[in-house]
Length: 251
Ligand SMILES: [Ca+2]
Ligand SMILES: [Ca+2]
Image (cartoon, rainbow, N blue to C red; front, side):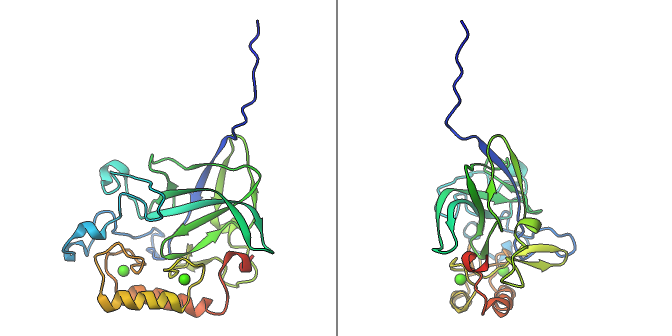
């Protein structure tokens, strides 16, 4: 007797091959710099290096845990944690959406995004959805159009084609550094804007000189909080002050 087969009602996951660069990169190599994993050049200046390094639990409150995150020989080079969200029912009139899924993930120096199993992340992506990428000190980015994926598809989120073709902001959601398009640094309070509120946060960091902490003020991720970090933020305020870089107004 032939067995009956039923279609699963569980949506198959889609593998996302994301590529995202934070602003502070080596403009020659195009690779991201970051000493959060091992301490780098300035780590020796930190009284408690442990406080300065990338945490084993993600900074986005999702409880994602990676005990070996600082062990390069096991996990390879990790730049920092990022967060990827899948949005459904996006309404640009009411500026509302449904958060369908979110994952805390990891960045490689070349912008490759992996999960804690060192694999490309997989998401349930049913219907028309948007992909949002967040980093704790950078302006979040969103795919410029919805994607409709199902089945065993593998989707490459190419930030050059999917993010740059925005029209309202002449600078787009990404800016050029060397030959690479990178996320804007400076949204320290993660409200979708780079503005005075972020400078106020940076000023507090500088005032108390909270170097050697895993701080959003260290946008260059070299363990120091100094004028170099402030320069990035101030430069980006100059570009964005009058143009909301909020997703909804930019699209
Ligand atoms: Ca902000
Ligand atoms: Ca820094």
